[in-house]
Image (cartoon, rainbow, N blue to C red; front, side, top):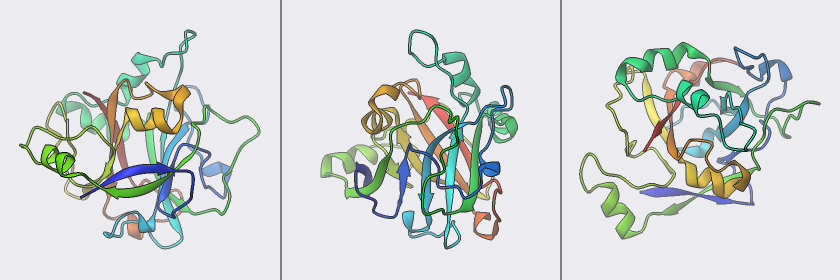
Length: 220
């Protein structure tokens, strides 16, 4: 099993942070409350996994509505809006609009508007094999797991059971520590929780700007 490592070189799998690789500013989701542009968290391209969910030449980008308090720490009430801690909240996460996962054509250069939202520093995704110890921890029992970012596998450290609709598949786990590694000023963005991306298996037939899955954060 592989783990995600971050690199300064583009390996073609995608990126954490940075401006999104959109061709059209109209595709950039807005915060439903403030109207401001949402923060791009990650972009994944077709080669990210052997299982193909993304059409050739397209990508999936995850956006969050993010706010900071004056003391520099991230606004915890807002975090709760994109956090799942009870199964009953899942449906509201799918339609709540505080996290958006969209399918879009893959631009050759990042799109940076004249007044950008909060942007994380960019780091590119690469993979390494887990160590024997990490592999054992991942498979120790059904409730345990490793606190590192990884593609697919099991969505470890879930505090409550998540019964996603059958057309969605767990695609990526992103931990707060890796967000801080990629962009040190933004450590704590997830409230020391983990972000989970579930991709819509029908996204491969999608079109520009379509919803391609859902993303939520759960505190550890």
